[in-house]
Length: 178
Ligand code: SAM
Image (cartoon, rainbow, N blue to C red):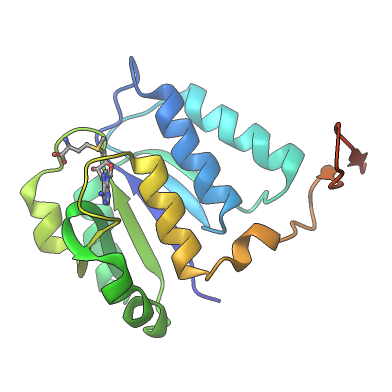
């Protein structure tokens, strides 16, 4: 099974906690295998994501902080993985997503917070635009994963979940498993 891991660049602990946590939540819920925070540590974000995995499943979901981003990208490529950088300046997602999927190789998905240094545009095998308007790393990641999995990820079931939602027309219904 192909692994998709998100590399979050430029996280600023004093102002990006919520957005970076949401990048991690989307990565987990939409079928990626992990999130790595580049070049900075943030125990709060790591703790929130690990707690979510503990309750809602996917205890194998990788959550790392303080990783050297450039080294991580280079190592990923050395090991045969593909690097996708999400940027509005890249190629339109619909023009490359089938090719990326068909490679059948592990994918590192880079998303920024502030201006992404040029070196990542060079290191990426694909610079991919989710439309060519500026929006959000959370939205860009969600759309990329949804296109990659062709919508199937919304029905993924996580077998180690302690809480499972039972769909209902009104209100909230959950099953607690211990
Ligand atoms: N000002 C920053 C720049 O010039 O690179 C962009 C900041 S944007 C809020 C944060 C991240 O969202 C970007 O680094 C990119 O990963 C993602 N993003 C925003 N719009 C995008 C788009 N249209 N397509 C793909 N990714 C996008």
